Length: 441
Image 1 (cartoon, rainbow, N blue to C red):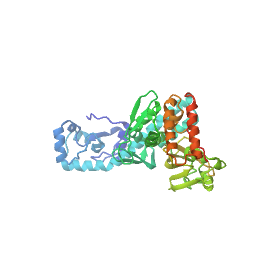
Image 2 (cartoon, one colour):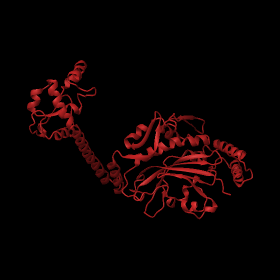
Image 3 (cartoon, one colour):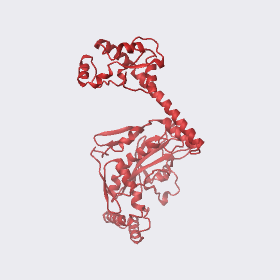
Image 4 (tube, rainbow, N blue to C red):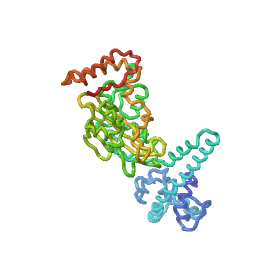
């Protein structure tokens, strides 16, 4: 008697894949009469020497598994009794195993289908109980079912994620996220990325993986200079993608698919998409990037179907679409966007992600206020009152360096920077420090 145990789902899949017949005599077989037989006897797996000989005499592959589906055949009681644990001749075994192999794809499909049906039943039972007890609302039920139906969602990424070892991820499955959280992040040259973060109490952490980065930020570790803030964007991207994948669902409705609308369509992009999210007094009446461009103050450096590079008021911003899916469980397709800002005349760098959504065919893009779910490192640097004192002097030094290196020391821009420094030195440490904004001339 076989020592291996099989679930009813496995038994049914094997039985139906072989047309409900005994593989040996080909006679019809009732499910209750089904016996699962090991073509190569089960006891063989316990004798390494015999198994090694059989791999040669019977032509078994190196990965042939005695307990695997490739060795299982449906049998009636008479044929199973006749065969018992007898080893078939190499010719007879090859014939039977070839028939088994031909049915394997159908066995796998049926088993997956029946398993999903069983899971569906479990989910519906759990939902019914929760509804009856008032633990969840009907609206929450809809979101739960949609998330479940999406299964192992796969999303194509417009910007690949880079990891050490030359690993480049351009298409991501939800089931892969947990593993990739622990993969070392790579720079553009495929070398390991290393980020140094510091806590207000003086502790430091060296970051190499996305999980380490997420946990460090959550515990108050932040970059200590502008260079590290810019370097942190290497980790911001995979963190954003992994966070999005954990809640992404196929969209029921889309106002960005047909026709395709994206970040390059300036007439739908609000002025909050400008570098640093700030607009000058001159463009104060503008609502979209197209209107700002019409004023001649916004320069489009380059664009593709999913990326946009702009310059505005001494700063540049690069935006890249990363993925499209329903990311806030409202049924509408959204876009995850990666952005990177830098100063055209200084050392300022910053980056991160946001989600854009469009709720009607004639509506502009909106930025979802619920994203991201973690604090951006720069926001921590500028606004966390527990570390302001430690960061003020570093910020003042950087602004002073910009002033010292500027070719136009009497310009309004330099006057604005000096005002910021004076404000920083006069503000009490307990007061949150705003992100410095350079006023337009």
